[in-house]
Image 1: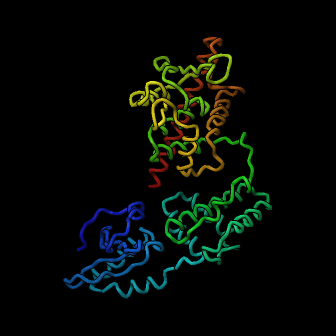
Image 2: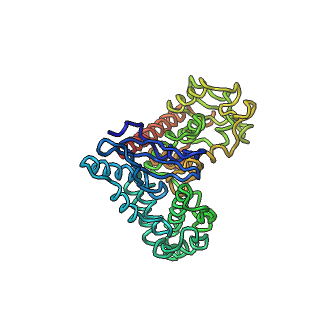
Length: 396
């Protein structure tokens, strides 16, 4: 009976480095991955037949066969062994019919079968639709390394000519993710879609992008489960909850916050205004700020630079954190948080011009109204994040 082993993950397999001699790492149920001195990784099946340990049966190259598929094959071979049949001949036949991803069409099928296995049905459908409708008919028979940026531009221009600039950009992004996958699998050395700027394909009015409730939930859920630093996660959440400008938040100091009264007073001099700007804080924002306060490393700044507590994080830090997340939210930039909150708030109150901050001269009733409105917004954000969490757990 195969020795029990802790199941591997794709991330662990990708991280395996070559050594002076080749070695095997077990996944369990007879499946092992052998790492060659060249860095090549090969799936093997370890088994005993008639009481004797047999030579490893080769399943195939890791670049061509996902962990999920390799496990299925190992299970199939284990069933043969249980019947007293050697799996070697079957494994050899299987390898003979495995597609070798030399051309883009075969690479795309490998990508769809492996990288997208854990994605939602809609995500898989939209990706396959972009590939089947526009990419593969045009360049599907091209060798992977022969696909150029000009090919990507040509395909996107054809889509734009149909009056579908958003689909053109979506298709470019599908190709970008496909080639990132192929590079990680050592099946490609460069990404032709990477060098095609999004702005050259479709230009969108940056003042009109508003995230739906579902997109808000997916975005914050992705932030929550990412491996970016905790203070940056909290900063991104606070941008959503407070409707603050990015620069106002990252340059904020502890002296500006009155957490007991749930108020944030931004000095007029700091924002180039005539009067201080006062922001009402929903209870969720207060909770996040108290967490930051308990763990603070700077007496002055709420978000100090890791290079020293005498200055805040750089203005580009949050942008870089969001970029690293690889969010599947089309045409999203950080400023969309503020616009999104404003539009949703207006819909909640059914009055134009609802804003998140109030001036000191405003009446107390207006302040109460604003506080109620912002608390409703924060509760709405919480509910959308919970929906996204439940959806992710259900998919898993």
